[in-house]
Image (cartoon, rainbow, N blue to C red):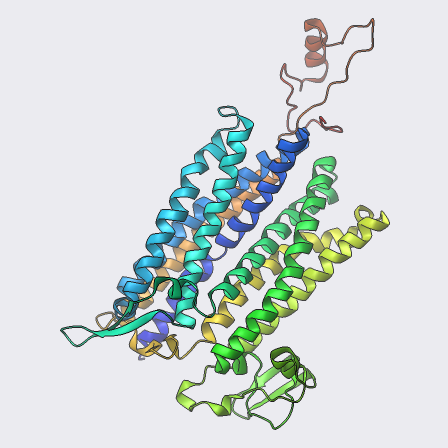
Length: 490
């Protein structure tokens, strides 16, 4: 059986990048959340906010470590599987990836040690500064990666140069045109808000789990409310961001928009927008479809009578596939609307004073984090598959970008190897996260001030008697994991 090396290389890259993409959005979203809670700690000195920062820092560090390990693999693939592509975009990507390493990774990793280990070694303000720098580093990293990827979607600021051996490559002529290419800022804000959603629902999931188990209740309630407001901001902002990005796609990649909407034939009046359906590319129709008349024309052109270009406007060889982009795009949009409903609904029930009494809603929050992961992954899928058959839109086809010396057997063997290694890494990640979540936060203990004329009750004999009586007290102010904590220091 003949195996297509191009298809296998695409599958390999999809496997590695989709696995890697589990971690960067959570790093960004959780980093911003940590800045929020540590800001509250610095401003109020309420010990519960420090407890939050301590706990979420541990989970952040685990996620960051796996993310770094899985990110290295992708850069090697540029040279092994996609050497022709790398020669073509090397001048463009070299600048972006170098900037990512200098301005982002070094900043993030440089302050990470202070963030994780510096609680009792540096001042609170210095630790807060480190938290901000780690979060800023993760955001800077996303900037340069998204700029590089966006240049593939909408190339700008370059010219083509023919080398001595006859190879054509792209070179930068305007660095800032590359940075601010037509799609970069739209895609960047969309990635950020998607990361905020994932970070917020990750926190909501764990907090809801504690509330359902009646563990660390006060800690979980405080954390839940901050994350709920964070989720509402991220999900509502993502809706607006998605609207403007869709308009940018209509301007710059109209064939991709037609594939995302399964719009096969250009009409003479307004274009409907499908809410759900199953595309049939052979028959050029959508089965079981539910559509809103003229809605796509309204969203793209603000005019219900302006037709949107269909796939029939483009040569057959330039048309992207329809099934995967359509399904992934509509799943992403549907999940986005679910996040808006969950976050605004949660705020409504909090306003009514019934939020924490609704067990069914807390169960929804526990599992909603899976939807946040799925939304981030499907967003990447519809963007990348919708760009096909181009590696660099309008300049380099995917079939022309693979390494000529790599065989299909080698790629297949590497896919199997990566599958095994990544399955092991995923199991380790889940095990470590679960262990830290089950252990829970190390909560502070509040001691009441003694009444005038009385002893505090914390003399050496009193402490010793409690230790012998209950077998779980220590001379520190930190209770053991099994000790219930009902109050926190203010």
